Structures are given as C-alpha cells and as structure tokens.
Amino acid sequence: YITIIDDTILNGPQNFVYAASGLIPANFALDDDADATISNTRVYSNTSPGTYTVTQNAPAGFALTSLVCTDPDNGTTVNLATRAATIDLDANESITCTFTNSPS
Image 1: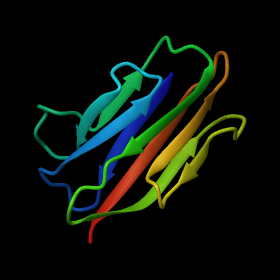
Image 2: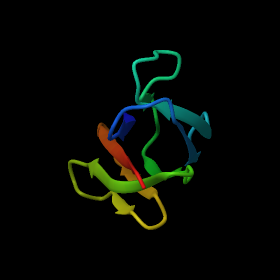
Image 3: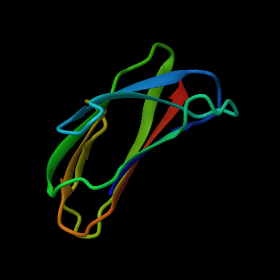
C-alpha cells in the first residue's frame, strides 16, 4: 500500500492537488477540513513493487513545511524544495507519506 496524507495547519477549505507518477489516478486532490467531500487521504492498494513519485502542486498562500514518509526499509526519499516524495515500494510493504502545509 501507498498512503498519501494531507495535513494542513489551521485546517481550512484549501484543496491541494497532487500528481502521482506511475499510479492511477495520476492526479488527485486532498483537503484537510471538516467537509468530507474531499478526503485528506489517498490510498493506493494492490500496487506493484516499484518506484513512484508523488508531487504536491504549490497552492498560493501555503508553504510545504514538512514532508515525511514512513518506509520500513528507508528506501523512500523526499525533497521539500520540489514538494516530491520518491517512493520505493517493495513487495509486501506499506508506505505512508504526510505532506504538511502552513499558511505562508
């Protein structure tokens, strides 16, 4: 499994758009507020082992303050400047990446 979580400090109605290389859907939005229309989590299940990149588009008025991925073998890398996680998914592995944003 690959799980992407959007965590926005001062939860609000801002939608954050993501691009996922090699995953379907390749584009999705996450929203960290009380409105359940758009979730703050995207789960990719039944994903084959491989390397995938998930990038958050930079919304106006917000800074990506943290990008943390939990990977059992530490093969996943993150780049805060480019807002990207390069996920190294191995067989029977679950990886979770949390993108944390704050108003800038």
